[in-house]
Image (tube, rainbow, N blue to C red; front, side, top):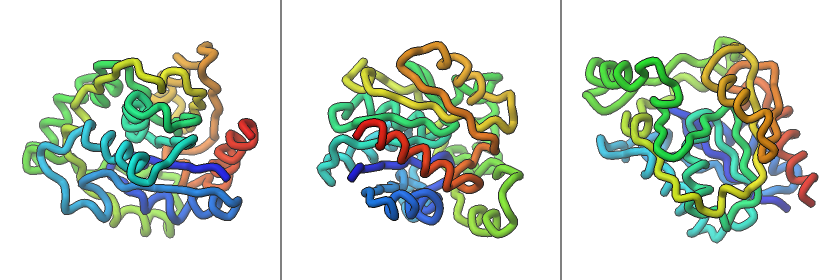
Length: 239
């Protein structure tokens, strides 16, 4: 039995995986945790102006420690890539594999805004002042390829996110996580975005295996079975 910990993307929550990929992994006999990061989902009441990327990294590190999880397959979607990179640096000895699903992969000192580029931080700060009391960002658009039923379920559950989670640079120490095997899954619609640029930079790196899914950014909604099969395939290779 493998242990999966899946970290959701911006504006999301653990709820986004409990109805999609997580049940398929559990049906295959594995343990699955889908933590919700501070200030989002059912923890939205905990959002504060000081909530930042470090807060979210610590959320997941604490899960690993308090649940005494080891040999974990740690998965991050989108913004969740920022989080799992920090977790691997701080608690790499508890992990077995890293999987980035159309996710950000920061280097030391980079923030989400840095990776997005094009003046993203200036735009985010202006938006937060306009619509988020100066410290929150309202949810961005959902992928257009969601079914009407899925969209009706997803959109009311998304919550504004503290801006410091987007603008705080990650601080990496070069811990044990740097040696972990890792997979990057690129969603190819659209074909030119920050995730495509990240994947292009990883293709020739022997530490990474790069896969492609012909779908939009929210692959857990549109290709849940295929995502589950990819995760199960990682486990089967290591058994």
